[in-house]
Amino acid sequence: SELLEYRQDQCSRIISRKNGADWMEVNVALQRMMNDYAGIIRSETLLEAGEAHMRKLVEKAQNTLMARNQHELMRCLEALSLLEMCELTFMTARERKETRRGHFRADYPSANPGMDKLLMVKKVNGKPAMEWREIRR
Image (cartoon, rainbow, N blue to C red):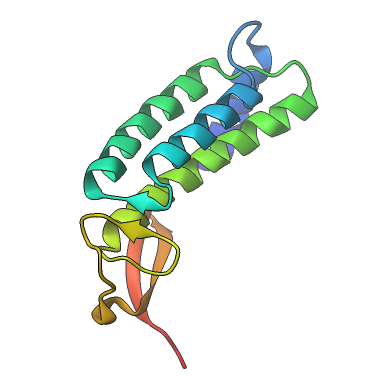
């Protein structure tokens, strides 16, 4: 399949590089980015800036990640997966225009009872797509 070929090529590129960033560098950058842009206090401006920063980090990681052995390769792939989850976090945080539970939206300081729903994310044609669903009680 196309995805399998892409993943095999990705692994080959990472393991064949002699210089570049290791998985720990990507993890530190990811943690700092999420804390700075998608922490407890959020806003549309912060989330947009975080998404832009995340896209740059993804590109840099894909072009520079290197692994000296199979264990490091696994950790590099894990870091790339975490970046995909980061993208979904930014998308869903931007979609939920309210303050709810542990996250405060500075631009939407109140809870919106109309948004008392589940926000589901799934892949459609290889891209994330969101869908609101009623909560079953």
